Image 1 (cartoon, rainbow, N blue to C red):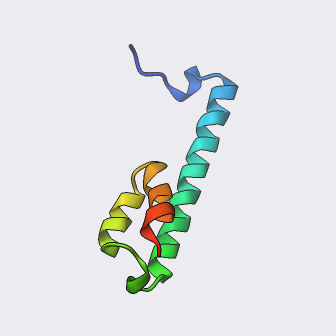
Image 2 (cartoon, rainbow, N blue to C red; image 1 turned 90 degrees about the vertical axis):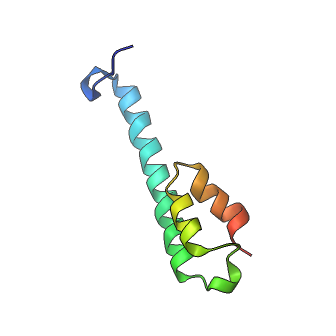
Length: 70
């Protein structure tokens, strides 16, 4: 299967990609700011590990908000 270019996508697909990317970036930015401001004793596990995990698509920030905070 050949890779599609941006111009090969329909306007609806382009919109979906942009919305998905915006949601993912917003989640990650919010999680990183929260992690940076939160004291170490109220974070489950090492903060550097959570910082790296947050970079993993949607799963990282959601996992941090669900399981990473006390």
